[in-house]
Amino acid sequence: MTIKPLFLVSTVIVASVIAYFFIDVSQQLEKARGEDSLVWASDIAGFAEKGVGETGSLLFVGSSSIRFWNDLAEDMAPVPVINRGFGGSKIGDVVHHADILFKADNPRAIVIFVGSNDVTPQQTRSVDTMTARFKAMMKAIREQHSDAPVYYIGITPSPLRWTIWGEAMAINEAIQTLISLMPNTHYIDTGQALMNNGELDPDNYVSDKLHLSAKGYDIWAEIIRSRLFGDLGLL
Image 1 (cartoon, rainbow, N blue to C red):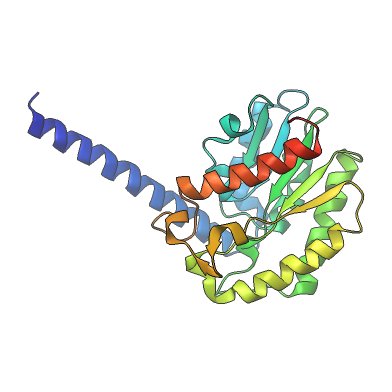
Image 2 (image 1 turned 30 degrees about the vertical axis):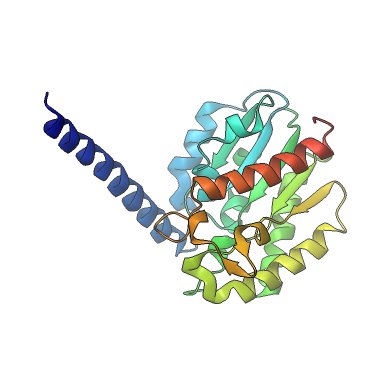
């Protein structure tokens, strides 16, 4: 095969991958606009089929930013990980499916990123609503893991949802206050690191202006790994 046909084939493959990503993201965001947690039934069934995972894993649960963290296992090595990120999930979806999402054998820690899809330019939630949902999620977690360290990654800014970042910060602050009153529960802020002088760095996001780029995930990995490994005595 000559160089030109090879280039054309490569271009087609790359274009197909990009198209698949955006179609997938579009479908997940469409699901997220509703309040029916059963739309995620196939994702949850997939987690159930995989079983509880390795004993002593770091259990990551949340929305698409967890799901698309392709290098999660490498970033947290040598500690094993369980990735249960699904679509455009909201806190209510995590509560509804908590029995399966948080089913794990003595997890070393539980890391959660969910809430960003609850607060969008099209539909925001009040601070009271979000704190009530957070409490419900923590109650569901503690019914399975009474003593496991839990880390909540605060809602992050994104170019697509920049107009409601003020509302998101108020929710983050309220949740952080709640967390300070909960035993063995911790808050991780990554939002400031994704910005420069209060402005978003577009290089930290892919072209949909919502999800993290490789550079954005590198920032996440450094902050989250350092916090977990430092707290858990793994450094």
